[in-house]
Image 1 (cartoon, rainbow over the protein chains, first blue to last red):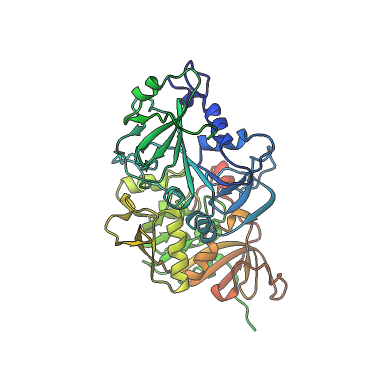
Image 2 (cartoon, one colour):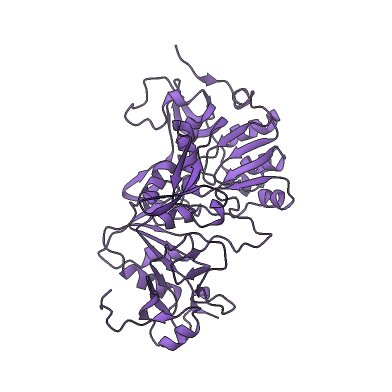
Length: 229
Length: 236
């Protein structure tokens, strides 16, 4: 049982809250950010004191705030997951073409998404397992990975069955080719570089060998990597 | 004098014909023109192609239109919202076709259709199953896929307030696809919670301009999918 699947503190690696906290450290003040539905949404709760991020939700709101208090919500003030949200001071509404101009025109600084698989060349699969009986649904994922300047993936390092999610080549249908910049898993932070997976940081108590054994492609360790990344 | 008001949702949708392409605004329940959709169910047109981001939840609104088997094809980005059972069942039974489109490409295809742009190139979807069979061309060293503009025979949308000329303002995230869809149909029909005389709205704040709107129908207390579903409602 891995920690990110349960949200409980496991013996090894980061919990999903830990992953969110670690990722949030890397987002500069003033960034315009789109958080994918589900686990990536946790990032908003983990932003360091003193930093203000502006959250974009692709259904048409910039300056999204947290969930409303019970009974205070508006069924027509929702996020991309169709949950009720609030708006922050400075928020603005817009239509879908404008919303996706923000995404596809490269105006957003960061997109954080979940993954089924990430390949060492940055390919991402996160919308379909390709199963015959599945109802295909993509939403804005392909637009986000194609258009946003930085794409971070937040994921468990392996599937529930222990299969690597970081692979040489995705076997599931792609969301985009060569689009992921960095992966934050329960075991490590890993960059996608021209040379493939490259270790940025190990979760506390996790050895490089432990991570490599659970990864479907080689991970490079750069001895000369600049610190404070 | 211009007055685009019609008396009822039923009158507003009376000429929607079998086989028509109908764009329906909304992202989830936000902006879904439930009363117009229900009027379309009553009206009986079938074999429709529906362009809408989702496929509805429960047994009301868009889901009810599908359940009544009036829809031959859906063009959308996300047909499996939580609480959505009608579309998945029909799709698995082979009773409805699906054209899946990335959400931003869907918005841009509708925008292009409404703006007289036949087609455009975008990097979204390159290398994925959704680009299969489509022309790919390299611009600035990057592959782009050719996507075609979308037009419709009718558009059904929901506004917060409209005027007699068909100018419309929306409510929060209910705006979503409505402004593009209004431009892309031969006949655009707006249901609005308030309808006022021309000259009343702030001309600086109008979102959809009257030139794109053909009919305005006043629906003072629009229903919401979530409330209907909580009440266990189904339509008809």
